[in-house]
Length: 296
View 1: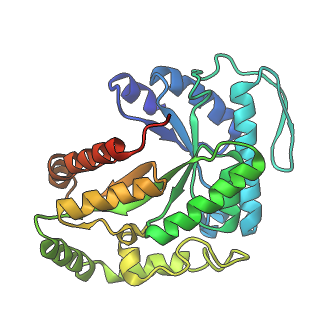
View 2 (view 1 turned 90 degrees about the horizontal axis):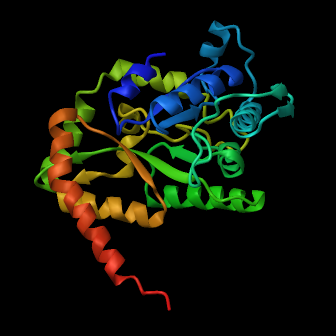
View 3 (view 1 turned 45 degrees about the horizontal axis):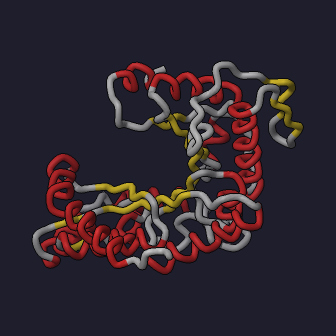
C-alpha cells in the first residue's frame, strides 16, 4: 500500500485513496488512518466517463443512479467504520455482521476518516447534504459558489445533519501587477494544446446533458475554462497579491473552507503565494475577526 511508507515519513500531508470495493477500502483506510495518525481521507467519485466503466466490465448506470450508488457506498463505509456489527441491505451493497478491528482513529471532531465527494448536479448536491463530510466543486465565481452552498446546506438541514464543508478548485496567477497576471493568463490560453482541449471537451460533452436538470459538470464550460480542466480560471484568482488575497477572503466569507490551487510553475509560484499572498490573507482575516461584534 504506497500511502503507508509515505505517511510514516511525514506529519502534515493528508492522504486520499481510491478503491472500488467498500469492504476493502474500509480495511485499507483504517490501516492508513493509524499509520498517518488520522490524516487519511477518501474521495468518492460517482463517475462520468462511460468508457472507463465499459473497459472494466462495470455496469453503466444513468446519472442519478450513479449518485444513488455512491450514497449507498458512503453509508456502507460509514457503518463499517463506526459500528461493531454492520448491517446493510441496499440495492448496490450488502453487509452482514461486518466487523472491522481496529477501526480508524476516533476523535470528537472526527469520528472516522473524512469523506469527500464532487459533482455539480442537483443529485450531487443533495447527496452531499445527506451523507458527505466535504463537497468539492469545480471552479466557480461568487454567485455559483453561493448557489451550491445554499443547495447543500438546505439538503443537510432536511436530513437533520450538519452541512458538509466546501472545497473549491482554483488556478492562481499572482504577479506584481494585475496587467502582468492577465497577460500570463492570455499566454496560457494561447499556448494551450488545442487538440487536447477539444478532445477533453468531446469526452465530457455528455456529462452535463446527462443530468435531468442540465446542471452537470462542464455543462457551460468554454474553451478557456477547459484549458484548466476543472474550470480553475472561473474562480478568478488572477491579479496582484492584494486582489487575490481579497478574493480568497471573500470566498471564505461565503462559506468556502478549502481551496485546491493550481499554478503554472508550481515551485516558484507556490513560494510566491506563500510569501506575498498568504500573509495578506491572514492579515485580512485578523482584521475581520477584530471587527466582529463580541457576543454578550
